[in-house]
Length: 187
Image (cartoon, rainbow, N blue to C red; front, side, top):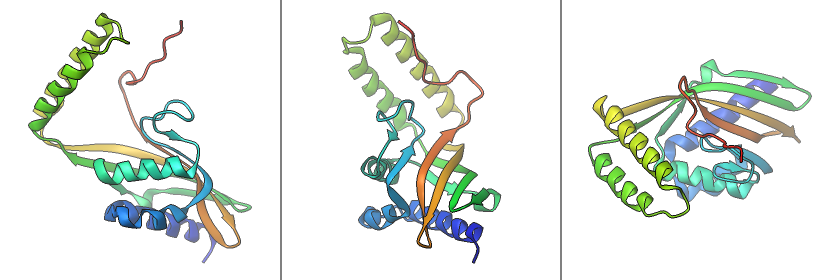
């Protein structure tokens, strides 16, 4: 088996873990990553905060959270772009995340809004704008049906050492055609 096939086998093991979502096997799953692996989730904007994890411990937390609360990740492994040179590989692959979000999300959003409105660290105008935007998105999206399917792309860097390939870096990202959800304001 050549490097490309070995890397494809690593991706298959990754997919199997995300299908099984067995938190009892999380430590075994994490052996797919190097100890200094960097994993960036869809909510990662800056290193070391939110879902931008700069070590294996943070990556473990992200995977656990995905398995417990996220949608069903299905990679299109046959469509993955796999390249390799001198023991380093880079991967770009499409996939989908599917989740059912039902009518209870209206109630969940109202509970969130109640807590958010009480925050004093955010100006009132900004709180109101965020609540209105989130409320409008909730009504719009739930009106389109309970089954949500989001296209996702995952890029990764893998490294080989002593015949073993592992992930050194991985980034989960959603496409957007609208303004990004996160915005940086210069002071």
